[in-house]
Image 1 (cartoon, one colour):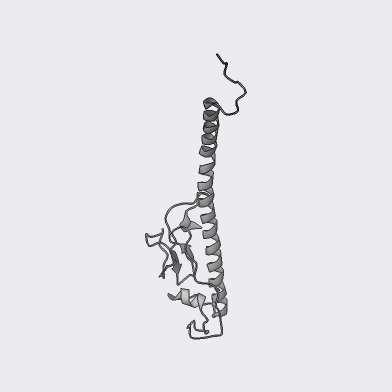
Image 2: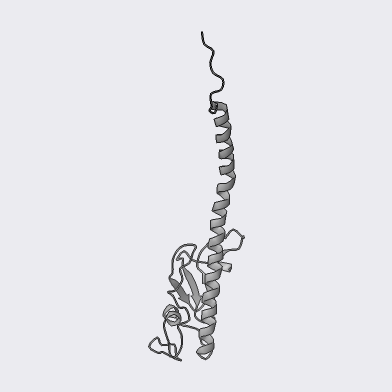
Length: 153
């Protein structure tokens, strides 16, 4: 009778199970952090887009005799304008070099315009612009990872 060779190389089933359990625990810790990072980057992109458009609105106001863009603000900020804000002019602008930014939270680039600002965001998504005050907001309900409502950024 021969005795089994104890010098065989390989892992036992118990060793493999321990490694799989450790990998599972690590995945359970790391994956939620990736989800949080994605939400935080969307909120940061939203804040950046808001700052860019707000700056463009202020530049428009300075160059157009303290008048804010009207209901056609997307064209007035992305095309050249005359002193009255007509997009047929070539004296001023464009204030946004590329196309109008999409809202990174919902992916919508449409702008809802009105002369008064509602108390909260609507279900339309995209952006909200007040033609009387130049106020520009994200027209999205909910709050970001920082706890701030998107509407209040």
